[in-house]
Length: 321
Image (cartoon, rainbow, N blue to C red):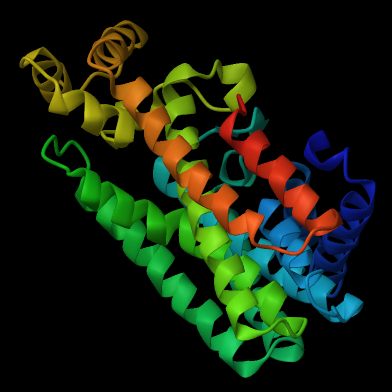
């Protein structure tokens, strides 16, 4: 796991318990599943979603083992979507590490992703309330719908800001929101607290994805773990491109119509996006979502969970990977 949570050692220890719960769930399966799950855990970065389950639960009276299992289920869902996304995108690297399908082939990667989905639902059925199990199943449908929408929008220069926001709401923000809500609900938080934490998760998720899309242009491959401009090369026009097109004199649209894929053409196209204010305006949008997150946090009870959320909110906005 990355050192993202080093300043919060108690939470870091709980996240290691989550990782162990995922490893344990694979012990009864064959060696390929165990090895694949271990590989995914080694490259699964910040573990934001299970951390949000745990932090939200601390505003109530969390049943420790149950929260750990639910947090593990949420992370398994996220891992499954990454395994499948990497196959669809043809990505050889994630965070600088070879992807599962690159090492073991697409067939194994698909099957392990399916195993993670099934194990996630099994764990949720055993440890979470019925309404949270239902919300998780609805989440899978929403994530899939957002991926279909993204695929349909490839190379479409007319994609609107509203359509982009709707897409990332289903792709990223909804799972952040669900992580907060499930943690709060399962620990007995009152409805108004659950709603506030759910809104916080949504705003954090929106800001997180916008920054992620900015880093596809700005972050060197060593920091982001993927080649700069990969989304642009795949014809996935994210918010910097969409906002750049709003100030276009025709040259950016013409460059996109040529479907740039070489390093040189991608660099030129990215420069046009920067010149037209696409990156700067995208950062302003991420800041607006972050400010909404700050407002929700300001109404939470003072204490360690709130302090951790304040710190992570700023860290996510200003991250470089």
